[in-house]
Length: 427
Ligand code: UGA
Image (cartoon, rainbow, N blue to C red; front, side, top):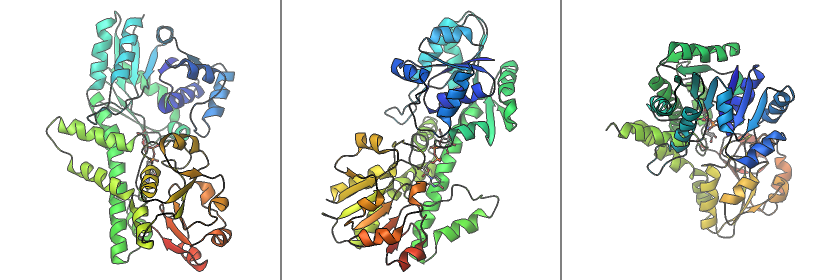
């Protein structure tokens, strides 16, 4: 099948590479000439495990191509994926200008019947609007299918290839079937719905996952007050299959390019219908508070943070990504800098992106170097390399042995036995 994927961000590039790997001929389109030139040389603009190898393999086997010529890509393809960004508008809603631009281009260049697949996260009703816009300009019938993406940064390739489910929102049976056939090799549950349901499934799923995190974070804060251990509480809750064990890790809040944006967007969708989503509102509020919990712990420990050397382990919003968007480290670093602390951060991948956002902090390549003379260590992002540290060595380097474990990943008893004062989240 000949497929065009418009937009080479996380979603577009991963979808393009994976669809090529499933045997399709994929042409990836972007307006950014530099990005396309780099992609043609095999340079991947994002850090995503496995993606570079997948693109290289499919480029070698002549199944994936890159171009800035969207008109040509559209003309040559039967199926066109829209995977452009939907940044947050001023009022919290998704900004659809890129989606609509692509729709217009498709309409102007459709030289035969086509199927358009909307993979961008868009408000309910957008699929129909996209079709209307395309048909304003097209002489041929173009069907639009909503196919939300559920991949996670850091495991995006695996999430695409081994999904929990694929959702296809279609009004045309024929178009729905064509997209169904595209995903059939994945051998997963495929749910066919209306476009409206598909669009809402995406927002509702992200809002629910974010709510699960904020819920467990509230219970973590309560655990501390009543002397319970949130790791035990979450384990006990998660054993109930109706609750499930995933996404019950308490910590210093969620970040990223999706949860914060989608939690706001779904509230906007509801508000427009005069229906406030009170649980989702609370999710957002709890998360904003939770990001600063590590700083509150330091404030309990030190009467003033002025001049104190605080080491931040991890800056990316989660491990295995260089993405700093809405990362908890931003709030934490800013609050510490404001209170006069000397912040030194260590992150294996996100440092360059962090430098564009964080002001007034220093960086180090080595946790052991950074720990020299430090007053406290705060684990913000649970990168693998931070899980197996030699804390005996670190203890010798630090001025005061304080550790704030913002993701509850360390063995508390072991650290205490090494003379550390340990602060977790909810334990
Ligand atoms: C999220 C969803 O998990 C994907 O299904 C979805 O496709 C994607 O958004 C999207 O809409 O594009 P992602 O933002 O890549 O994926 O990251 P997650 O792994 O979901 O983590 C989000 C945040 O939640 C991170 O900051 C992480 O540290 C935090 N988190 C996650 C917790 O604090 N506790 C948990 O138990 C799980």
